[in-house]
Length: 209
Image 1 (cartoon, rainbow, N blue to C red):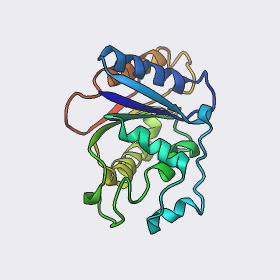
Image 2: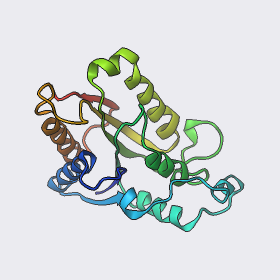
Image 3: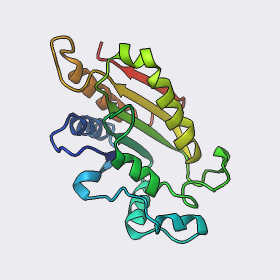
Image 4: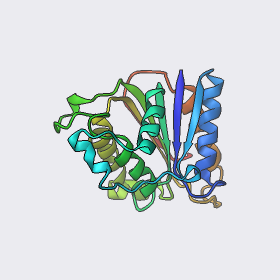
C-alpha cells in the first residue's frame, strides 16, 4: 500500500517536520511505501486563481494541480501534517485543499456528500497545537474544527476513515510540558504503523499525558 504525506510548515527543522518523519517511519515499519509532498519546499502555489475557477465549467485544471491530484490518485491513504495557527490550518494547507480537491475530480457539484468522485481512503490529520487541553476544551475549538474537517471538507471527497490527532502543548517544551514532544512523536509513529488498521472514525486527543 502507498501513503501520501502532505506537510505544510515553512521551517525545515520544525516539530511538524519531526512529526511527519515519525509518521513515515511507522509506515515503513508496516512495510508500506510513502511519498512526501512538502508544500513549502516544493514551492506549491496555494492561491486560487481565476483559471482555477474554470473547474466549475468543466475546464481541466492547471498542470500543477493535475500533478498533485495524480499523487492523491496513486495513494491508498493520506496524512496531512500541519501546525494549528489561529485555531485553523495554515494558508498553505488550506490552499492545497482549495486547489487540488476540485469540483469534477474530488466531488460532483451537488452540495451533497453522497456525490464523492474518489475511492475511499484513510485520512490522518497530525496537528501540532500550541494550546493546552484545558484551553481547547474551554472554547470548544476541537469539536468545531473536527466537524468542519470531517463533514464540511472530507465528507465530500471519498475519505474514510478520518483520524484527527490534536498534538496539544506542542509549541515548545517547558517544565510543565516536559516529555510532550516525545509522546507526540510516538503518536505519529503509531499512526503510520496502523494507517490501514480498523474501519471506524476516530478522534484522538494527544495531550502527552
